[in-house]
Length: 416
Image 1 (cartoon, rainbow, N blue to C red):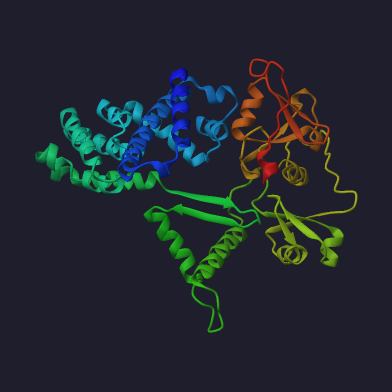
Image 2: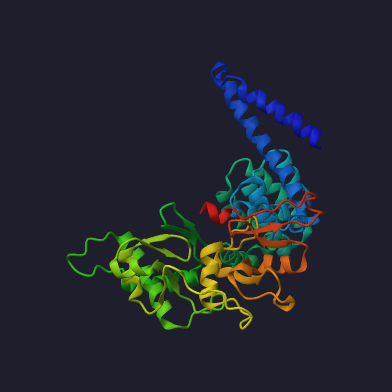
């Protein structure tokens, strides 16, 4: 397989180097069509490889929490795109042969495959395998004319064509399936910008959308005739107000052993003289004025350090890594310290590098932040965790994974 792929890669490189300006318009269109077909065929090969790697457990054997996370680092793609690859590989693996042949033949794209597979599954549940086979043929034919969105719309009445005797009875079932997909696809993405701001995006299901609107709509009305905020700015401020209200209730779940709160770290001089900057536990910075303003809120925890810093080594009197020690650990590691992991501090536990049961003390020099998966992985695996010369954690892999056992570090949080 690898030889054939290398040959195809060489051919593609030659095509890219061929000047397009010297090609006739007719040939350009034909080349575009051929390129699109080839793209779908390559997608089929890629999905078969992902499915096999996922089935072998390659990702978890190399220390990743899932195949999607491993693909993110291996292919340098977003974790959402990686998850979709894994899901589509599983879908294609169990799909009828006609769907796989259509993708490998370049006649359908990945989104059309997803729609066809879901529609055919509904047909098979309602009318049996024979009707499902008919549906595959019809939907693949339609895919040559319509994009995925229109194909899904047409698919809601596919039973009219393959099993009219049960079409009306299953129309309601199709609507229920649509509701199920809406629930599955619900998500919110929070992306950090380079200047510390966040970009929010996502899709809410009907129930969550109603709750969000009920919560923020009363807070989005202009405060008076002199309120010059745009509608978008008012929604932003309303969302922030709802979060502050939630923090004040004291009813949010604990976060890594501490009550849910915002932590702002600054120097004593900076706080009293309103100079310098403060740092959130996420590593982002605030002006001294903003720190003083936040410190007025009972749910904002100021971690004020003097010149020598706070005493953090609590010895063996305490087993749990919490309080000031955990806050220092968050400021140092910024999230799960295992190489390649992007889990933020709120999803992490404090781990003793030298286990408590083996005489390890509860101190910053013996602690590291690990997410739940990597905490379990380190405890049951052969990885060794230690502090490097600069005081940051590094992980020595087992010999079966890296015979040279070169120390590895998490660079994800440093980049942030």
